[in-house]
Amino acid sequence: MNTRVIGAVIDHIVLRPPKRRDGADLHDLIARCPPLDLNSRYAYLLLCEHHGATCIVAEAGGELVGAVTAYIRPAIEPEEVSTLFIWQVAVAPHAQGQRLASRMLDQLTARCAVTHRFHKIETTISPSNIGSQKLFDSYAKRFNIGITAQPYFAASDFGDGKHEEEWLYQLG
Image 1: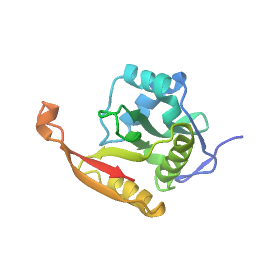
Image 2 (image 1 turned 90 degrees about the horizontal axis):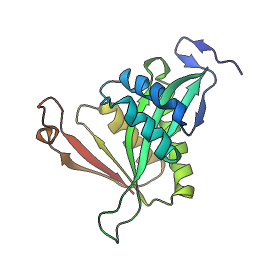
Image 3 (image 1 turned 90 degrees about the vertical axis):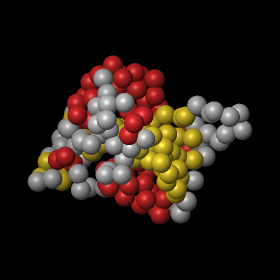
Image 4 (image 1 turned 180 degrees about the vertical axis):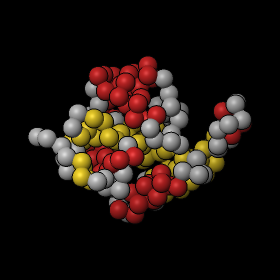
């Protein structure tokens, strides 16, 4: 099926788990989505290869236009509940305004609830990233689950003096 871009509306988007071949394109997508931190192409290849089952990409006309990267966080304490950690949420600038981030997050969490049986969701968000704050607030409202936020990584933890602090958001 062909995909048409009409203004900013894309009429056909496929949501699917990423494959190894998506690693480089995922890197390029993240590069177009400030304020997200850009990691190496190798990191995105490994993410697609090792954690594809806990990630989702949005494809339109052979182009990645969105992604949610995530993994099941290793338990620190034996009694800890299984947690889906959302690492990055990206939507290409020309695909924004279509609730694509919400659609990807909803589909990913529904899939992972069955395959990985997680009990809560965590993510970190910098104070200036209002879009991500709204995304997770709306997710909590849609599914009637609690959400809390607290400081997690101080700006000094990043060592370069250029990175904003990150807050830990916990849902569920």
